[in-house]
Length: 351
Image (cartoon, rainbow, N blue to C red; front, side, top):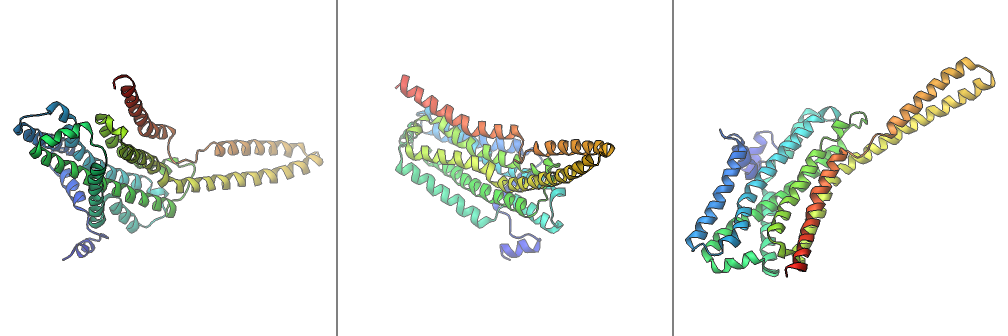
């Protein structure tokens, strides 16, 4: 029985990718998933350290940062993908009351938000692996990489883990684009905008902010231990592209609901303006008739409408909390600025 038949037999649109099946397996283990992933990181570090020791431990101090980075970056990406899957489903369930959707479609979105199709996932990982190889071939070699030329056996082990990391990063890029396209679809097609229920409208902002921060952590970490890469225009351009992508990841999936909130806000303010017009017409008529008791009541109505107008006008239409936006801006922009400043200082005073 093929994958599609298996998936259909379970009521699923497709079979989950092997990464999704692996992270689901880890969650079912009798130990905490975090402990498993930390252990995996240490195992990858130890494997690299053993092969480095077998070749005499040359350049150990120089290579240690990239050994540790590679060891923990692999489980970090697995944890991040699983965390974002769980966060997406939680966000969807928390905004259920604001959605115009059938239960079957809701279950379909739950599955799609937390599972990738195997084929496109595999292709994305391979593309990023090839891209990483090409970047290494056609760009300058970081100082730490130069030491690998004297350690042929260790270099093989290191590159196997390193290219596995590149594969997972490609998977993460695919996971990000696909998951946030689904978020945009849900917001555009199924959400019922209620400006007095901002919690539901902001539910997906936690997912997009977490994705944006997760996207740049690895790049900045790699730049931190290899500051000489900033002299490489190709790598610097790649890092800048990832930074721009991180900002887009946070904002783009929520633009649709922002426009819907703006439209709803304008509609509500317009309705209040029409009520103002009606009350003012009555006010003028009763004023001419010297009907001051009715005028007093109309004044209360006008005050009430003013309060409503002020309250609605103050409602923000960006579907995230201000502190969430500040967090993303800080995480995306500040590390890049500090890394560049560090590099410029080193060039100016220590070169």
